Amino acid sequence: MNGTLPDDPSPPDWLPAWLEGAWTLLASYPLLLALTIVILGIGLAFLARGFILFWGLKITARTKTDLSESILRLAASVTALVLAYLSLVAAIQVLPLGETATSITVRVLVSLLVLQLMRSGLRAANYGLKVLGSVRDRFSIIEERTLPLFDLVTTILVVAIAAYALLMVWDIDPTAWLASAGVIGIAVGFAARDTLANLFAGFFIIADAPYKLGDYVVLDNGARGEVTGVGIRSTRILTRDDVEIIVPNSEMANSKIINESGGRWIKFRTRLQVGVAYGSDVDQVVELLERIAREHDSVCEDPEARVRMRGFGDSSLDFEVLCWVDHPAERGRVTHELFMEIYKGLGREGIEIPFPQRDLWVRTPDAL
Image 1 (tube, one colour):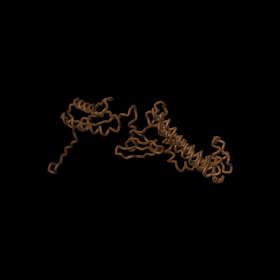
Image 2 (tube, helix red, strand yellow):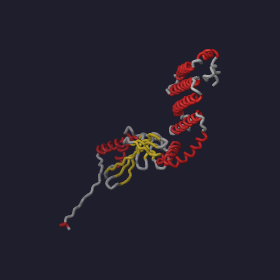
Image 3 (cartoon, rainbow, N blue to C red):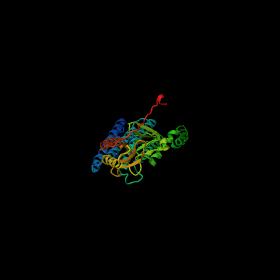
Image 4 (tube, rainbow, N blue to C red):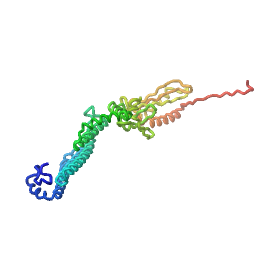
């Protein structure tokens, strides 16, 4: 930068003509000149931030969400941050620190600025994903299940750009680092096969979406619960006992998973086995069971509840009540309440619920 070194007191090219006299006067006192530059730069940063927020908030006041305000505040903060760091860099260059000290100090400041911008970039990416989530109905590729994939890609992209910028600031050739990274990557690939398997399985699960957040799934071992998180390494399942199961994605990808929330709709059919005594009026039993199921508040009207006779048991006539609930999470509660009402209804109608009975004949030696 021409004219900014202590041994060159002439004003820099970018300085307005009406400030050249003040620059020449302050150039005799480098510390005072540096302090003046910092104060003016920070003041300009606050003015720029206030200007952006003042007029930006007037524009975003028409929106119904707080997301636009958050994006505006982030843009104002980044603008102020860049101006403040530029003033610090300009102030360092007018101090008599020597070429080496000045170069190192400036590079440290620029490196800190890059890290701050990386942090702001991650926040901006997060806001961008929220914007995509709000308009995902317009684009088929943007869905709730693909948002974690976009999150990962944007995070990697922002970090990669920041890393490249840091290498360029310190005059480090990234080509050699990339070659070294390839060799290291091969070694890491052999040492972390399971981790990489979970990583790639996470990509495939997010892309293929055999299940999504909020689905009720049943694992191979019989564990059943709600999917609360689909990460890159593992899937989190919350059971009905409020116990969280963390399953590696490689196992989820290679296992048979029953998705109770899949299919045409999220409704779930529950089955209740009911046995009545031989000699009961089967038409009365069917009518009673259908009425109890239809009158329950949590049982869906469409499809309607139905009752089927399934066979002749050893001690009972076997019936099955088939009804639908709005969500798999309601299965346990609705089953409990229906069994309670069925038991009371059968008792009121005088229909017997049989239980297995055995007659035991004991022979005494005198009878032989």
